[in-house]
Image (cartoon, rainbow, N blue to C red):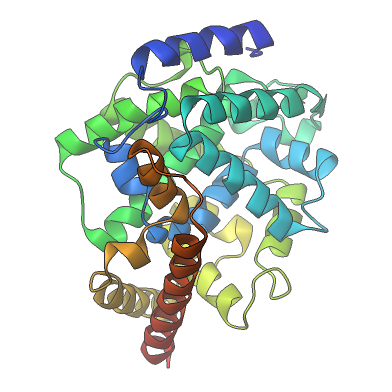
Length: 323
């Protein structure tokens, strides 16, 4: 099902009814979505989300043929998260503006799907379309599922009722892509079944493998050692059937290193104050809701310095754990 501009506008109108506080945006301070997304630990799930997306042939071929990811992997990562954070933490006007921009970009992305890729979740399909509703939902699902897994790894598992609430709130984010209710699983249990089914029916194509190689290269991930860390954490979080196709080793040695890494991150991260842990987009959103300017030069400078402290402290703990 193709999501057209009229479909998107209907979806945005529905979102405005579900989240009427335009200043707070689509979520707001009292939502579990903000509680999960505000944490810097969300980036631990970034590699998993990227590879799960690439394992969908629609995404892999669209990225391979219509983006500069192979030559500018960090740039694409930065642009993607700029849109995601504008949608999640911006006011409703900013979220809608980003939604329309992303949709317009997607409208020009379509092409032929090779027969070798038209199987599994794409069985019988001959073309890919970046505004296909089911493909859009898969990208959305990888983001919200990976963010929750990263959050729970570091800060503890949510209660079932909290997971239900988190998933229900996440459907507001899906509306920014025009994804219809009929495509979305109705509740958390159905969403878990959907994720399990997709993990068994994704198809890792040669373009997906090539792009993954670029994303996890030492050139794309700096400083030195970050590529090793990213591959290790991603391997630990990935569904087992998808590790081998992406050349992610996770035997006894890697498993012990993964567990040591998690112990180090948990021990360090939980001691940090929120001013260090929380993403700048979240703190700017709180300033906006309080009626203060979002961009405060002094506060932003302090925030960047604190993020640097976080990176150095966690890096030191990780080096000790992996020694």
